[in-house]
Length: 340
Ligand code: NAD
Ligand code: LMR
Image 1 (cartoon, rainbow, N blue to C red):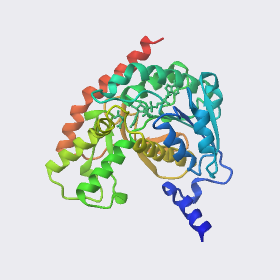
Image 2: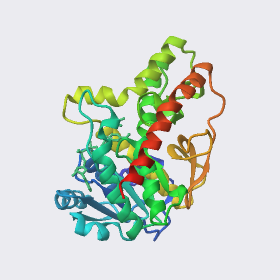
Image 3: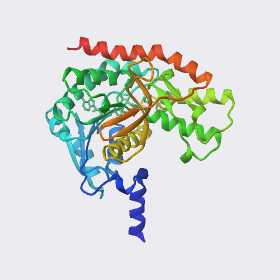
């Protein structure tokens, strides 16, 4: 009975269906920034994912300990730790998916854009290494400000001649996770059944949850929708303030990052109809990057889906976010042009 329970727990992990992991399918996942607040729990969660055959944990320091610790867990993947720049190539070589939570987090009173200068440089150097050692890998960008770090990554890949827009993702899953949680609480529905698309970007008003499309539907007042929208947009700040100087969301982010990575791996493995929201190169608005539902496949983005009908409130939110999102995207592109 105990082994049957163990088998069923493993099978139900993040609703991975049996065909998601064909026997012998090798998938190497690299986490850059693996010794950090997000990196450590994300390493744990990726170690639990049966689609992963090789887990590569990289940071500037501290990864041998994290890797030794995680490697004792009796799941499929072989774990290796890499520390310092001279080991970055080996960490990346052969990766199918690279997850990047490397960089500094916010403290109370800061915006995500205040992290730009430090994190832009970190993301640039990591993406240069990805271009060299695993140019075909999918890249899941977690480092903030996502609205600028994704365009920076695209510029790095373009400058190295390896850019494929289908393979670059800004991770906005935490916004979706929050929207689901807050909506379930307000609508008094089972959180496990809730679906809410979140579009736009990943900072303040650029985060636009579409509660008009939330399921199961509920009769919420416009005041309740406004409050839910603001709470979702300020979710990161809520955690930063509660942590009072000790960083930003790490555990919920690790969960969200693992959920998105799981979807990317399912897509790579040919599981049909895998759809998640992500900040990607896009033509659904006039902005060059935009978060919306994306269908994932064997080459990454298979289709960027539109966002469907919006309520008047959401339409206003969409118009209001465009100026900030456009300037964050342009800031990343300009920074890269001046950084050569
Ligand atoms: P942290 O400081 O706890 O960890 C960051 C890690 O990155 C550290 O271990 C550090 O050594 C490592 N690092 C720094 N430079 C590096 C380099 N050049 N190569 C490899 N590793 C490097 O921070 P955290 O709380 O884990 O947050 C990391 C980033 O994720 C921050 O920028 C934060 O704003 C962002 N974040 C994004 C989301 C999102 O929804 N996308 C959510 C939460 C946090
Ligand atoms: C979040 O949404 O929690 C992250 O972007 C971290 C932050 O700075 O808020």
